[in-house]
Length: 88
Image (cartoon, rainbow, N blue to C red; front, side):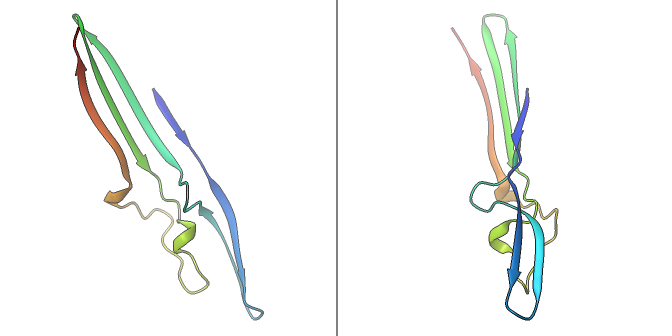
């Protein structure tokens, strides 16, 4: 099953001389995408889950003088990776 959330915002700075506006991803609760997989194997069940943050220009990293790339994925954005076998 595929799941996720998108938490985008419009962020604007104005210092009285210049205005800078960008579409950003919420730095406190970022957008994410995940996948879960479940497979019965005899009397056991195989489960896997993968989830990553998407980092669509994190709002906490944007300012009038700094604008990160739109698609700056970094390893710390790996939120969840799990593989398990449930037995009876």
